[in-house]
Length: 139
Ligand code: UDP
Ligand code: MG
Picture (cartoon, rainbow, N blue to C red):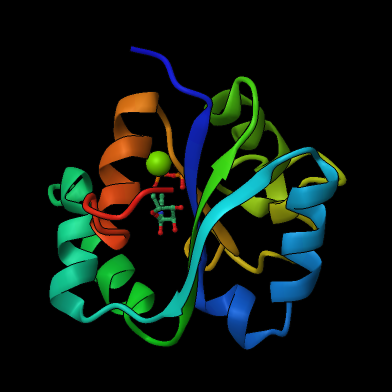
């Protein structure tokens, strides 16, 4: 199944460094519609669950601690070809390798504190969106 939705988070560094407004502006100017949005934070348990696919990776424990270190903004975004197009506008995981003008190149500080999350597939976009936004609500 393909959809035109993706899921994003502005990570703790993006919030802490005052980039919420600029990042949302970048996202909406790129043609994404915000379908749902929440300013919240993750417990270590919730962050561990969100990133469960990475649990065998060496960076997992640090990532979980980092992602629960401060507030985040979670959002569901809509656009044609949303997952792929959003990955393009955020840039590479490591901001030092991200193309100029991408969100991570502009606002991220390190491979861990890289400003934003973007889903990597339609299936994960749905799972991740449901993680934050009740499936009983309509978006
Ligand atoms: N990450 C990290 N070190 C690494 C690779 C990834 O700290 O060597 C963190 C980083 O915050 C990244 C997240 O783990 O965004 C998830 O990794 P993934 O490979 O899925 O990167 P993404 O899809 O976010 O570009
Ligand atoms: Mg990923």
